[in-house]
Image 1 (spheres, rainbow, N blue to C red):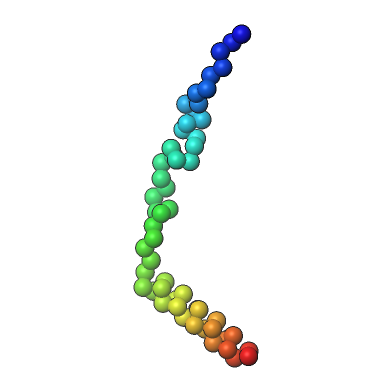
Image 2 (image 1 turned 90 degrees about the vertical axis):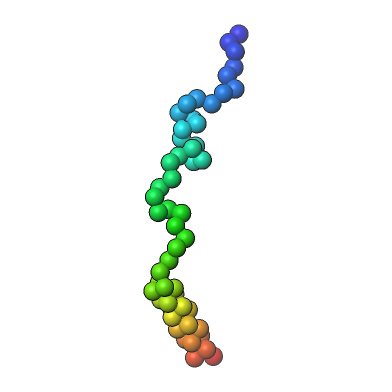
Length: 54
C-alpha cells in the first residue's frame, strides 16, 4: 500500500492567494481632495433630487 502524502505541492503553495506578490497600487486607500469633492457633490445632488420629488 502506498503512503498518502498530506503535504501540499510547491505549485499548490505558490498559487494560494496569501502567497502571491502584491499588485502595486491595489491596496491604496489614498484619494485626492478632488475625488472627495466629486463624491460629496454627487451625494448632495442626489439628496436634493430626492427632496424635490417629495
